[in-house]
Amino acid sequence: MKEKLEHLALILDGNGRWAKKINQARTYGHQVGMEKIKDFCIYAHKHEIKFLTVFTFSTENWNRPQKEVDFLMEVPNKIFSDGKIDFFMENNIKINWIGRESKIPASTLKAILDAKEKTKNNNGLVLTIAFDYGSWEELTHCFKQIVLKQPKLKENLDIIDDVLIKNNLYTKDIPNVDLVIRTGGETRLSNFMMLQCSYAEIYFNKKMWPDFSQKDLKKAISYYNKVNRRFGGIADE
Image (cartoon, rainbow, N blue to C red; front, side):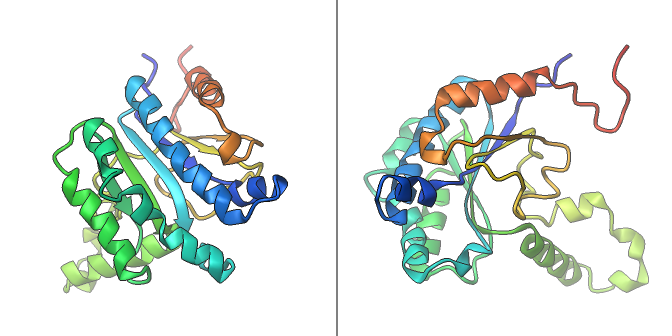
């Protein structure tokens, strides 16, 4: 039986380059790209995709110009403002977040945590915002949590297994990714959910995120549906 697409991840690349092509500030591209997320939430819900993860800010993005970073730090406040949170409530969308808490501004953290709290009882699409997220930082956090919870770890190293590691990742409550789509023409994961995408199908598209349409998404899903996912096994004869 063909495995159903349960978890779709989007690396939203190309916002700034798209804006520059139309002689706008890079921040304008991020604004347009931010608004597109809602359309893809609706699409995912209609097509019974249970989990949607969007990569919006990486641990490496702090290296961008300060003006752009400051704008991106305001994105959660804009997406989850009092008026706009209604969209997620009306569409039964549960907000999740993966990333570190220690570096982002207090107002940004509050906006994300408030959105999680307000939508925690929704049972439709789970929208995970990967914000100030990086796989290496996640693993560092994971190992620190394990050591804190297992003070006598060195006396029994067999405690460490893949289940223990998974249960201490940011993504412990969501399944591994089935399909990851990266827009913008780059062909790499850029430190994004490297463990969780270890058996994901990866679809690269040259279109910048603001130009990436639902028609393009359908093509990506069609590609996924044609793949025989063997997970290290042998294809059926």
